[in-house]
Image (cartoon, rainbow, N blue to C red):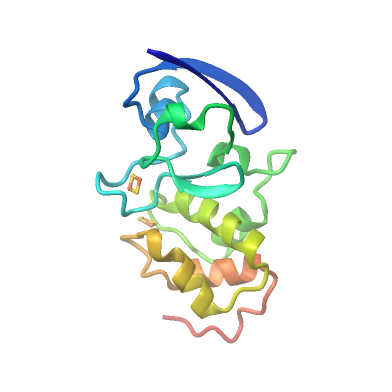
Length: 161
Ligand code: FES
Ligand code: FES
């Protein structure tokens, strides 16, 4: 076992992990932070996206020990300080950017990274950025619409599908 320490959503945490313990396992199983989902075993679905030192990472592709000393952000830390939905979460709700919601934590975390890099993306840029996030329910259209709305852009010209 290796002792690992990191900051998650602003709180210092530590634990003992096996060398092969994945970051997503540490979050979900050791810390019981189950907002970060596991949707595949092939590193394809993006349901597990968190931020590590400000960069989006699929938490199933990283060992917990590799996050030693890192600043980690998860979906549990995304709401506003008063508990209300942040602008991205609210846009997903307003524009029906989810159905079952399984992919949504990863979608929200990926969107947060996108809008930090590119605050006013085009629809094409949104679709390209989401390539690593799979949704089996929505057909993506309303997710794209929600992200465009979250970026403060007019979505009235984005046709319904
Ligand atoms: Fe990490 Fe699917 S669970 S990409
Ligand atoms: Fe069901 Fe995306 S809303 S997988």
